[in-house]
Length: 170
Image 1: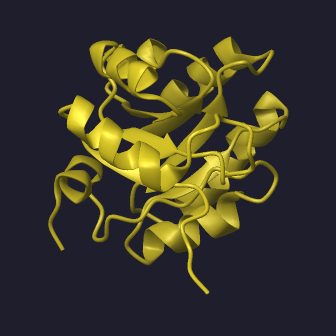
Image 2: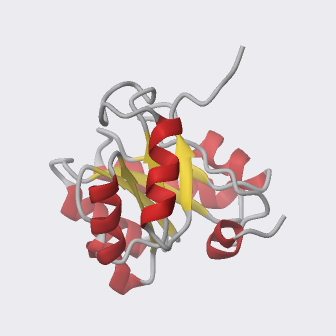
Image 3: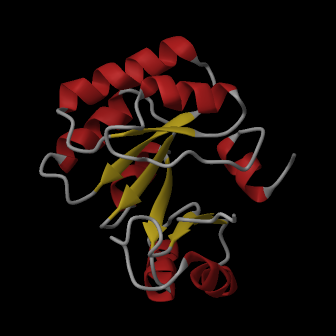
């Protein structure tokens, strides 16, 4: 399947695993990547060297692209930013901050956004794509639901938009 997202990320299917803290570790990330999506390792509250180990273990299990999810409010974000560059991570998804620190290293940056205003700002900052995540994704990112938010953001930006957060049916 070819989409703007699959071509951007060099993946087979337009599926990105969530960067769920403490759940999204190298076994899961490498399995998702091997299946044709984009697996993510969550930096979460992990120590920096623990993240390095996770990245290296994922590289042993897959040669396909995978990324790291980083909360930009993490107290060691500068060390984590340097680490993902050193380890050759190809994609970073971010929450709670600006993505510009990875762009000059050639890393694809996909911020998680909860509003049209934030989506426009991240596009201006050079984001390669966006994750539009509604309140269903744990209720920690905003008040708008995903299915209301996604079309608003798609209409407002010119980069790929990934829908996330509580999309399901009975």
